[in-house]
Amino acid sequence: MPPRRRRAAPKPSVPKPSPSPLPVNGLLNWHSSAHWSAQERPCRYCGHPTHLRDDKGVPADKVCAEDALADIAGIVQAYSSQGQL
Ligand SMILES: [Zn+2]
Image 1: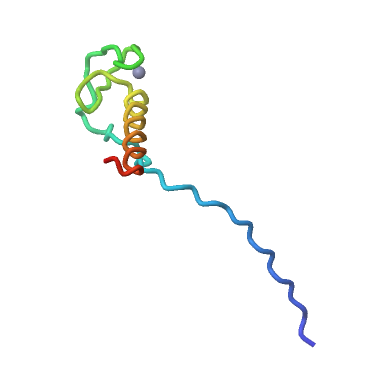
Image 2: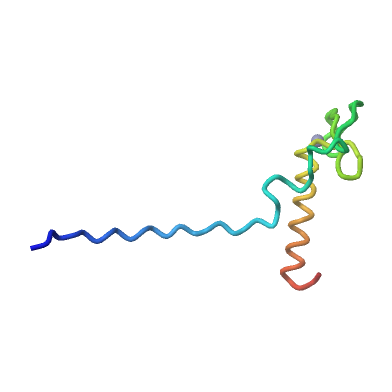
């Protein structure tokens, strides 16, 4: 008589995270020298001194600039999903 085998327990279903519309590494290429300045200036969002510049060359911390772009991306996605864009 062959040995009895146990049935494998069903795997718990884990909901897949919805794909983010934003790139994992952020929206801007911060490795570019265009985002760096030797002169410290106040961040346009929080006012802390920073050497970094956003995509328009305006002083902005990486985190502050990415947050601002993420807000805009979220707004664009919301309007797009409603067919308003
Ligand atoms: Zn800032």
